[in-house]
Image 1 (cartoon, rainbow, N blue to C red):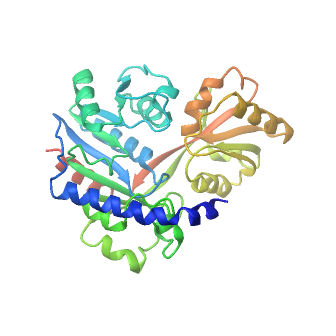
Image 2: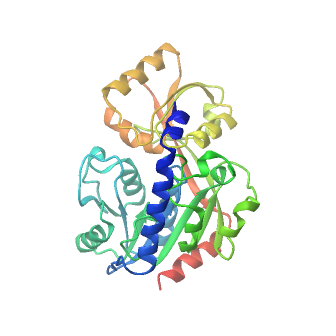
Amino acid sequence: MLELLRIIFSPFAFIYAVIIRVRNYLFDKNIFRVRSVKAKVISVGNITVGGSGKTPTVLMLGNMLKIFNKRIGILSRGYGRRSFGYLLVSNGNEIISKVEQCGDEIILVAEELKVPAAVCEKRAAGAEQLIEDTYVDTIILDDAFQHRWIYRDLDIVLVDQRFLLKVDFVEQNPIPLGMMREPFESLKRADIIILNRKFSEQSEIPAKLKRHFAGKEVFHGYYSSQGIYDVKTQKSFSLEDFRGQKSLVVCGIAKPHSFLKILEQNNIDITNKLLYPDHANYTTAEVQEIRKLFYDANTHSVLTTHKDAVKLKNFRKELDDIDIYYLKIEMKIEEQDKFNKLVLNSLK
């Protein structure tokens, strides 16, 4: 069905590509004006639809900058939220918004980093308000490569290695035919490119695409499992503790392949699974579906992602009799010291 829809809407991919190129031209020629704010700004983004590792990268950057005593704040659009405009999510000490108001990713980041965080569709206005509210001196923009209205001191772009290897596949076309928000030529705007292999082995950049990476600062990222955590108590366990167990896997992320792969690699039974759309808004209906399959399949526990855990925590009462755990991962950079130095130099 998805492939059929792509074929039907394929003419719109050409129109979309033309609009993107015209828009970028207007920014490049300063016809569209970019606004600066009174803080250093780092953008973390991608050129594809979802699943490239932006959230783990924001967490990695945030932890690194905190070590160097930067007063950081996180600003996101708040994808999937049920609100509009600027909303302060965390003042750095506590979460002051609900997940349905601001989205799952920003709650996850704010809880993990313990720093000010906010959501706003208009990043320049949102950044100015976040600075006024919390006095941060460095802002990390989550998913902002296409949002060019705000000046950034550093543009970091993530490229999913698995996607990169799909040369000549339909995915490497503009949406809605393919999965690309922008063509590979847009990587010329990036200051840093991170090739994210996630849990896979490192591969070479396909020959057809190498020209887009020539002369750029290219780093190699991967995921490191930090263990499995109890959603209710935050008690941690190793993946080995779940080997051989029959679990119900639940997730609502853009590309669940890596999540499923790491579980499978650790001999965790993923036969029973519920895969929801990206940024799934869990309701009583989904919770009842989880309960039914959990008991029907006689599974030991529910295993989910960190993002999904943020929303499933709202159903503690409904899921009180079910043990729910999430896999915690960290983004690692193989050339970490060089990466850190480049980031810090951009903030001087």
